[in-house]
Length: 141
Image (cartoon, rainbow, N blue to C red; front, side, top):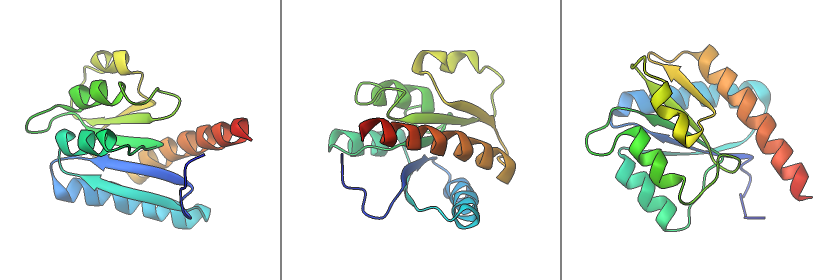
């Protein structure tokens, strides 16, 4: 099992708009405090930057991906990530303003949430993801 330090869940947030990354992080930090959990959060400004992290051997339990970014879309980024990690090891949540959620099925996302995000949406995602991570950790023991 990889070394996670004190982090219980490793989370990546990928959005080309800094304020949107910060909003998602603030909701995650509020959830973390409320539940008494420990998250490692890394933020990325592009799909290319996130993919480079995976190419260096990085991994995440949960990724929040914006769909509309400058070069690679969230879906294109997720397709590349799926070459490194399965849906069971890396849960992907698309954050989008599009109504066409069908397009994301090929990468088996945990969830697709609509902008603007809310604390309730992020809490729902984190409830699902933490249960899955706990189950995966227990299965390795």
